[in-house]
Image (cartoon, rainbow, N blue to C red; front, side, top):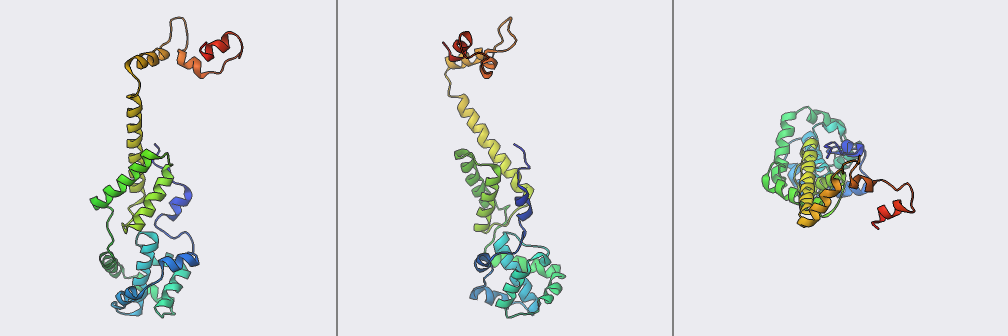
Length: 233
């Protein structure tokens, strides 16, 4: 199965903002409760308060940390700042220049809110089992499995892996499910039925195609001998 099965929209939105979140999304993902505000208040200075809060809220929405905070939509910045009683968004540029602080804050957020790495085998196997079950029981397109995996990772607080990593996992799981299906199908015919199927593939002396190939072609004449041949009469 081709590994590059993602739609252009999926490529554009994976782990990043594709536009401004709507009001419902702002309320669901970017609202800071009392525990959030208390944890944020432990940082020093307004720029750290804003930067820390934006990292936390973006993680909840995207499933991963965003390295360039300037890419966060302005309505998100304003929504977060208003909850912190901040009005000057320009202070974010000072925070964005301090990559060491950003990494330190990201580590604190991961630990405090219980986020997991994708490389954690227990979570990796859980996702693999889920995807394999869906691939086996349904005939979903790989792009739908990709969306399912992304939603599951965000919901279970597992940091999104690189897009290629997730694409390869889905491709491998689909291949395993397909291989299992063909094995089970090949075990269904009896020995006698297999022999009959094999004879369909043989090219009889004097003929140019097998009987199987002839069945794949539409009859030229739907009456007389041609009809009898294709109807099995």
